[in-house]
Length: 424
Image 1 (tube, rainbow, N blue to C red):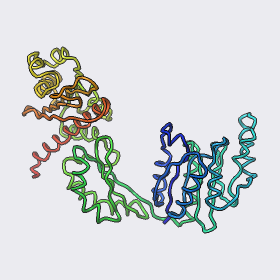
Image 2: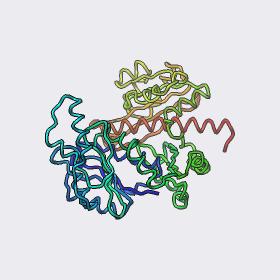
Image 3: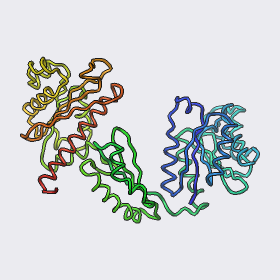
Image 4: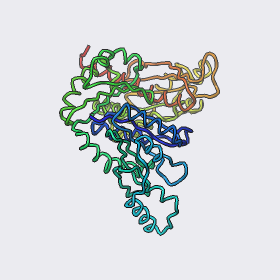
């Protein structure tokens, strides 16, 4: 089993001017081929710091894989640092020089002298051809067999080089037969710490497969990862662990892998022959947008009323003016009235209403910025409400409120399913 550390190179990454997507892509491809990634680093355009980083990586892992710093300009210093790290000198690689010259001829451009620098590579390296750009990649070998593989930083050049040149070198060299396969279980309405409490013993005891918890997008995922020599064997290893996780998570679990929360909701409503509508104020139609983003949403979704202004709440949703005067637009009473009005006007079985203060202004001590009221009308029964206060800026609050609204709806649907099936 090979082990590597990934190093992305460029001062623009450290300044935040460029988002590093290369390391994520490289890590995924390596995992698919059974390579263990020990760490990821970003280093600026400084040969001394990069050489130190690479030297350390070669002491911890079988190799380092870098992206960036192979261009013709003075700040492209990757090759100098790599040569120092592996103890080799840079020499002119004539086939690479000819390939660069030919590329310029094909474009009808004159090659400048600084492009010639791109053909200087560590002595004895394995060259990774680059048909998509001028900079060749390479694998530089230290005398003990440890390596530094370097690829361009431009994704359209790096990605094909990785999969068509570097991976085919790695597989036979390290006898890679196993790969890492992953199943992702999605949850909503469960905090990261609560989820961790439910599955802590599995996290501590399992080795293959192993599990990891990832919080993102105001939701929490559980990843189950198995290392095996085939997908079939990996899936057989993952299946019992995933089943146990679903039992422990309960109604907060809504699907695996590519399943979206909105997609799970639409599927479940359609299965039960139920229709949905939304009445939205602070979320501004974001809940409805998530639903209609699902192919086949027309099987369940009736429509939406975005009632931002008070007169729209009264005119379209029949919210009593007295309710708005006594309790305000952001209140439990108003949310309930919005849900009732949408149910009546749109004729849906299920209605979800939102009203809140997204900020940055408009908050008070009693009703702070981030306060959102939700109302959920399910059939002819009592309307369920919830009050939540979210941190963050305006965009964060609206996004959190949208996810919370969908989560409230999902868990209510699942409770209803369990009640009808008699499951305790």
